[in-house]
Length: 111
Image 1 (cartoon, rainbow, N blue to C red):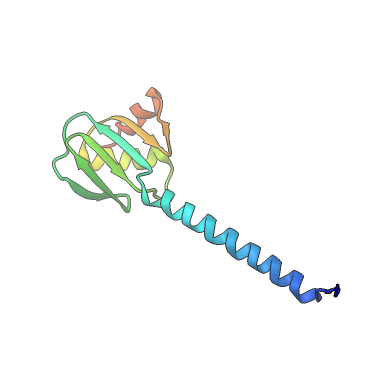
Image 2: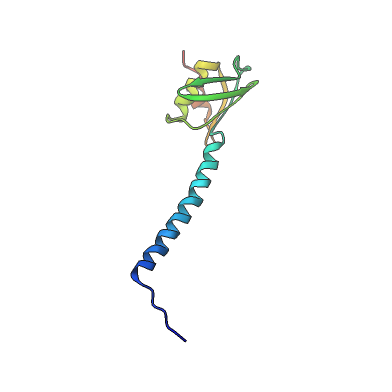
């Protein structure tokens, strides 16, 4: 039976293929995670606008429930921007982590 020997290039090609496949898999997972809402908030009263921008993030509200994609500021800053644009916030969650009562009070202290 003939014996085949691989050149050093074939190892590089295999590694490059593995990196490409891995990056494609990671890229699609990151894209699907980026597509969903990162922020969720309940306002004290229904929002006057169904869609608006606060702190460079587009908020979509249905009644008092609002969602938005991830912004670049800390959650408390994003909450404050929402409160300033839409009124008092009853609850605020960023990436699955809710603001505690003290943070929520600071969020709503904006003028």
